[in-house]
Image (cartoon, rainbow, N blue to C red; front, side, top):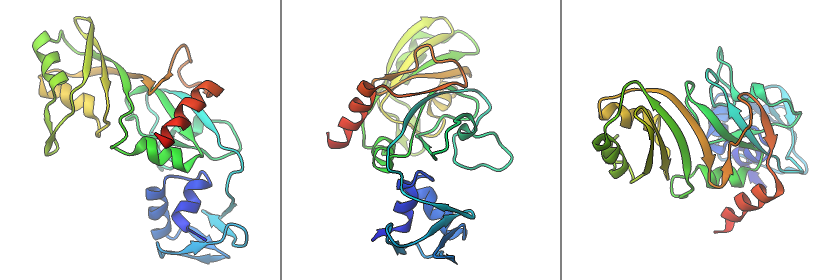
Length: 233
């Protein structure tokens, strides 16, 4: 027997946290009965689970995808009235994104139906690197870049130190080991500038490479092995 939100996660519907929201909203049925109690457990071998009117089942084979997210898409399983990243993945299995890129940002996004990997890579205590290519509205000073690299006060605490490499007067590369909401945009505003383009180029050892915007690919065996090794590290 497993908790219903864990079942939704392992079935590739969404994260456990989002699953809790769906349960509370009455979108999940067990054996044809709406369930809103978060402590509900189900037997994957015997119980029939429906989400939003459709019967779902645990996935037998994990899927790992790299997507080059275009601007204008929301990183979400569901967002009425908006284009979501799942609209770009044309496979019958349900996958969901690890972490987020805001609507105006582009670049590498990892999607999977592997609930354990999703939880580990999304957890703030997991120190995997994320690399971004950033363009700002006007020339940014060396002092501003040093301040960003050292860390800035944000949402009640200081951001962790980052590695920064200047590319040009208005462009730089930054490597973070955390992912607060719109963190890079907020840090740039704190030093008196404005992000005009933000593209994620790497997550851990997975690189965006030459993947076209809006396109996706399955991770290579080497990439999958590297990601899965993190589960036991």
